[in-house]
Image (tube, rainbow, N blue to C red; front, side, top):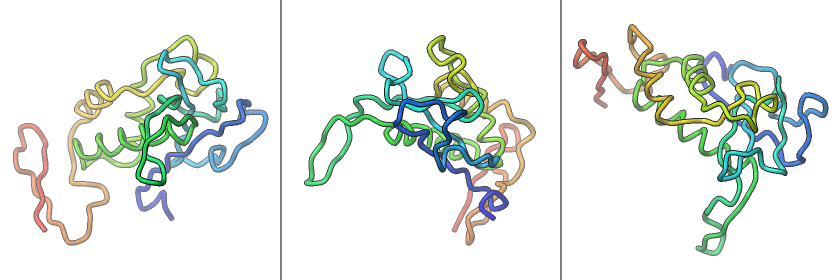
Length: 173
């Protein structure tokens, strides 16, 4: 039902440092079109030592080592894990959808996976062999033509094409 509703699930690949192609990690290994599995990289773009990987099961990578984050107790700390990498991809998906709300979940997924920066350290370790890149993703989102009304508009909103020359949409509640 979630896929039919246009929901994209971004999931952490796991922190066992193993190959998900050989030793499945769930929910990362669910073979469903709306699941996008995320590995972790270091600040240098190398696969994090702890990150699970998989040429056929882990889709993309994002920074996940030594991420400065909030922690309980109204504080901050440097944390590492594929669960620190996955929010980068969630933020990118949100950015793409805000930029082009008419895109379908499948299109946003294709944009994210098709706009990665290929890295030798990720070749053979992820489906795409690359790390996400916001600039590339937004440029790819712009290239999807022709625009259509949002695939899954929020209830209570009315969308209209405010400038058909550039294909942007605005809405009112």
